[in-house]
Length: 225
Image (cartoon, rainbow, N blue to C red; front, side, top):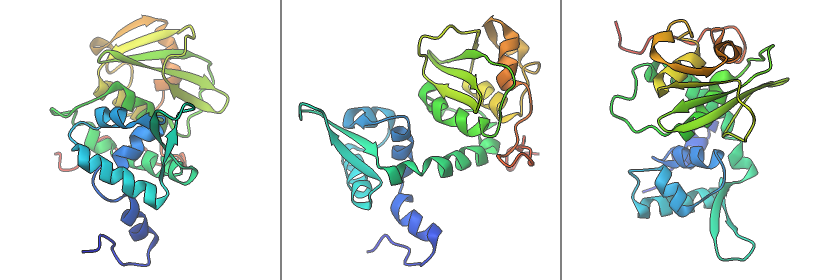
């Protein structure tokens, strides 16, 4: 049975390629950087090894993912092609769209601090802070680094820069701050801050809007009263 929708529609054709279960999460992992098979499997707990192999093969055939050999030819890693990397913006849009679903908290779901390196740039889109600061966000034993630049907010792993402040908290609080549904004043009693707390206001000082700058991100979850 064909897995194609059989529709001459851009959305249908895109879903023919990335709509199968796990495909977009494989892309998520590779947006963080090239990865070996074992690294992908570790980052996608719950996927069967044979299914991961099948999904990688399908994504390679479609031109989304490519295999890369190390210089000595002994190790294989997987990376997004240039075309596959263009999924970053659609995935960012889905992250922003998911805000009402995330305010409910993890509810037992797995969370990895590395995923903030993809979620936070999506939620910070369109912001250009006036102040220049570099801060760390420490969550569940991991840390991401936020740095204000002329073009916006740069999110990545710690690179050795001196940090103006470090916010120690939990994932729902970080996501709520980045989405603009929480303020630093709201969560003052729930977090620990090392360093200059005012530096964090360069990142979490104003409510978030969509990239057009006009629509506030919603602060209620679907189905809630």
